[in-house]
Length: 93
Image 1: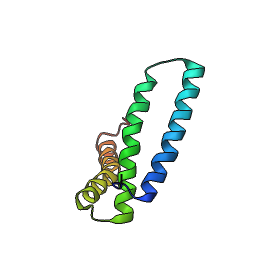
Image 2: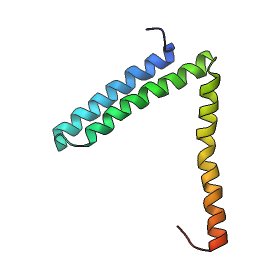
Image 3: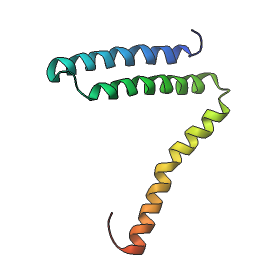
């Protein structure tokens, strides 16, 4: 149970409570639907974010830091590539 830091566990607790509340409100208002799959995927995102918080607070996550660095630069690189495409071809995508 000590895999996540205290901050990670606090995030997991609040996020799961908020997700369950949102899911129950959606079920009440909309009925069951495909968005339930999104909630299941979101539970995985909660675990990944808690791992990220744990890495930030405890350290020793060298591979994860490279993954986060790559993921944070991808939007910048895609924006540059899109700008160059628009400059060369003169069209918006």
